[in-house]
Length: 251
Image 1 (cartoon, rainbow, N blue to C red):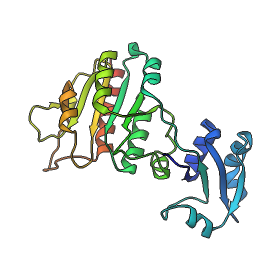
Image 2 (cartoon, rainbow, N blue to C red):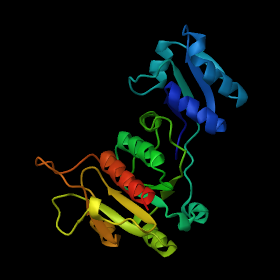
Image 3 (spheres, one colour):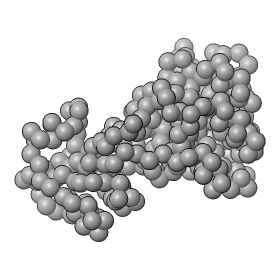
Image 4 (cartoon, rainbow, N blue to C red):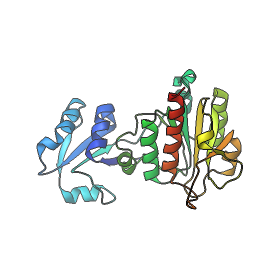
């Protein structure tokens, strides 16, 4: 079961206060800091009826699991609420050629946060994640995403492959992200993203699972030089998202 967790840093907390203040239970601002530097947070918290308390360094250290750059402010958040697949499908306008990312068991919270940030910036319609063996939404995800968590739907599903079949029926074409050294892949820069597209990004260590690969219509790869075998999952995801955006904007 999901639990309450702490978000840290001015930008992520400001973003969440502006978008969904009801998700925050309480904000803690470090004692002795300049009041002016937290004016925006205080104003948004007041408007959203989120209480603010003072806190010292010792208490912050006790509340946060790791030593991080909290910038003198942390917030207690309710458990993250994922969107549901059925509800999301009903909101998608297929005529606008949407893109959705499917994360095939990404386990690094920093990768998840970076993917959310890039996908949001590139106008992706949603991100689908597995319920099990998947990095959860944590304070680190909020920080790495620079406060973009929640700006686009994050959908949690029980079975990735069943989800792929469901989205195929809805009209999505499935593109898996493979490695440059693999045979039978299509060069990302030569692939035509002219259909509503679901991009499947595999696990950091093993890539796409074989069963998931079999469900994809095409496997694309990013050309590598200097004997580099692969890129970080979040970097690869960003490149694909922006290639799709580039193609859509030039048509």
